[in-house]
Image (cartoon, rainbow, N blue to C red; front, side):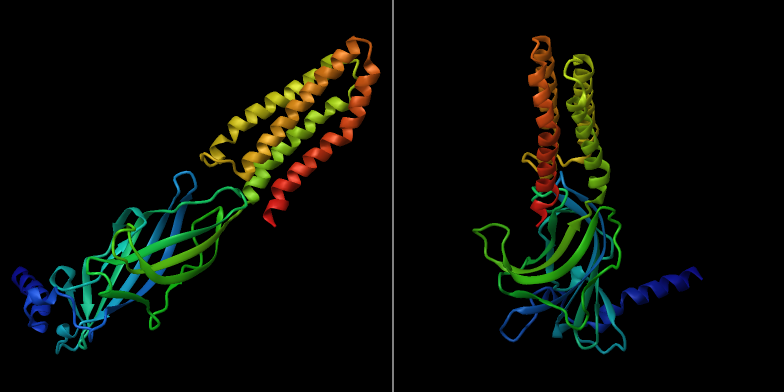
Amino acid sequence: MKRLFVLLFLWLTSISAMALDLDQDDLKSLPESGGGPVKVWVRFALIDIEQIDSAKQNFTVNYAYMVRWQDDRLKHDAEHDVVVDLGDIWYPQIQITNQQKLFKTLPEEANVSPNGEVLMIQRVWGNLSQPLDLRNFPFDKQHFYIKMMAAGDSHQSVVLVKDDRFPSGLAKKFSLPDWEITGWDVELGQGALFDDLPKRSVYIVDLQAQRSSNYYVVKVMSPLVFIVMMSWIVFWVDAAKAGPQIGVATTSMLTLIAYRFAIGKEMPQISYITRMDGFVFASTVLVFVTLILAVTTAVLAQKEKAHIGKKIDRVCRWLVPMIFIYIAWHSLVYMRV
């Protein structure tokens, strides 16, 4: 029985050699294409986007692609496709140029049909780099690119084209809790890793995504609104009662400081200011201003100028809320239009 399995294994592994009775070194050179570049049809299937890391400027993708091309040297008489190792034939050196760390999960092999059409499928998983503009965070829209280049051969010897026979596509649902994929497209063109290198054919998958902002509005911005509104109580407390006024203002300020520490992990760690940063900073300044006003009215009351403090309180009862409404409108509504 063991001998039978060994013979069966040797027979299966020798199918390629029997069907493709050609010099192996010749098979590794660029196939004939009538004087033009070798056409490589590309199909992609986006299985999942597992994570988008705004701070690290990358995203984790589960992605499969299929490429096929014609190589008349590989025509054979078998009734079915022949499986060959990629190391034994020429194949397009597809490089994902924005990869950080990717793992291939399928064998390095291809299927060769009797008419010489070669089909290769590969599935990759890992991180792709993607510079993000987060100035509109958390109401931002982003483009995520999967950039594939035909490397390894002389430039303009290989061209990547869309595969109309086998359309590309995306999974219906992704494991992203805070993003929504709103669309996708494929861009074809020429590109190079460096400006001084010859350009090569590129196939770019453009994924359009929008961040789901409900989480940040409900769990980050809403508590901040209540903290700011709490600080307005100082304008309704008698200016002669300095203790309650300053106590409320100080409590609001300390609560806001603790709040900012609590939300630190929710904010992207970047060098420039986002819309969320602007909203939090402006709210912090406004709460600090109420503390200063509370101290000011208390000092005026001690100097027997409580009537001036009362005028300040009456004006601030509507002026400070109006300023905060403008800040919120500018951060949450105006910048989104």
